[in-house]
Length: 232
Image (cartoon, rainbow, N blue to C red):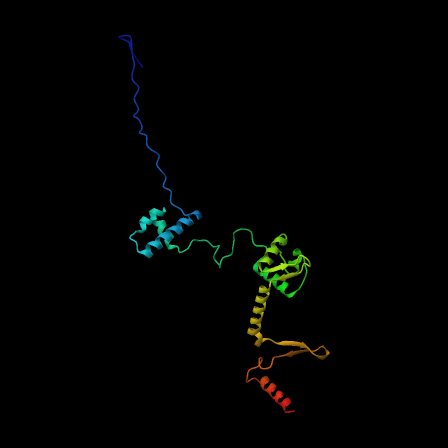
């Protein structure tokens, strides 16, 4: 504000006008695409479409397929370069890490089944693992009755409700017998048979003609012994 003394009037000066700042839209941040575990279905779809295109020899470019499946150019080629996803639940060379470890492994169940096939016993479910010689030092408590029952039932064994003895079906027993006979026929040439003789001595008995070769000294000694007995 400025006062004019000659005319006794007051002149008002206009304030300087600041130029308006143009309003700009906020810039969008460029987010780099990153594959997560939830994109496994998308990667499978990409590989399936590429394989379908290659098998039928369709005139479709990889760029069009990448746009259709929602992949960038670099990410799409990276997915195609990897033959499989990094998932290990079906990999036999990797241990299973998902969920709680099994209370009874396959080796434990095999030991229980071997015990049942060897010993005709009548035991409660809770004492079966201890009777089979199983120990669980890494578990806070032994497997429950339900877990043991499911494992034994899965191998074809049952328990009598009257006498509490364990039994199995005829087809399961026949299969065990067949496997035992196959192993006996396969390894009988390498077995030694023992028997108790007089005065409690242990003698080794062998089947004639199966334990020795034709050029073996024992075989010729056996043949001469048999000939002497026949001549007598």
